[in-house]
Length: 477
Image (tube, rainbow, N blue to C red):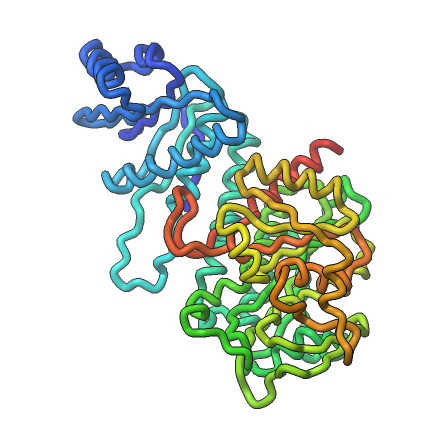
């Protein structure tokens, strides 16, 4: 992982200067000839990026102003950081010093964030890996607050940890290994963790998790992660629930092969919530937060659940299974019902739940729904705009609930071909009695090709959003 640090001198071979006007070119230590050269290029070509190579060092100069909104401006800074990161790696630089001359102080923080996220690689299984060279990003002492730098380091670390988890194949990360890893990580920073094995899950009668696991050669797990500081600002905990399907074949409603290739990403929600608790604990945020992670794979076997089965959930609700590829909502339902025991302040769930959500708005934003949490949702939406992990709210009209009524059981696990993302949300809503927000991250959790600082594969989506939300909550209180 690339680390952001301070240093008290500028003795670094690669320097990035962020300017808001060409007039500031004279304030970065260029010679008269170099300054004239830079001004000529800027005037002749209207070029926004200028590179000046010296024998022992290189200046990478770019211009950025803030005519648009703060959120869009910061996103441009992150994207610019990603492009500079590529240039630094292409030219084999290990360290870089970022300075902004004029303009907003937040510019270099956004640039550094984009660099750190873009420098991520997942090449642990390559025998001839040629890793990126960039290791450290520097600011000069006194040019940013220590707390801001520490926060960014922790948040990026957690985001990249989530990417690692999503990118791991199931033969290296089944449900038991996932539970072991996230438990150890949270304990290592002062948090608590407990893992329920299959016997415990059976004793709790978590019928959704057990049904999905019935076709698997591996046992399911139910992991509870907790960060509860003595100075927590919230009397009741915030509970995060993450879908942990470590691989999804679709069960007997088998997916076509082209739709199964990336199904190791079906535990992206679990990665998000686990890594957020890790980050909150490492940052010592004064917020009480709990993550619940039900985990299994969804495979075909003689004992696997099939269409027409009726199962009984943790809270006693009976569910008619009409599609074994709508399995995520079954394991989430047990976890959402279990969350009631904490009398939570609010509950958020994160799940790669429906193709309908991905098809509706693509990879640009996450589909979200809420129940009894309108004010909380507005805060989340604003936070999403700030970190550019945006949310689009779908309705939760009562009429959608009619579509999941069953003739044979209390409810059924699919609602037909219309409004699939919403009926999935209505299914989950049945198991809640607290302020709740549902995030369907099917379109945003995993991407085939890199998008600036979002590298190909797992995105680690919404770790950044949650950390900003939790920090804002702690600050306001």
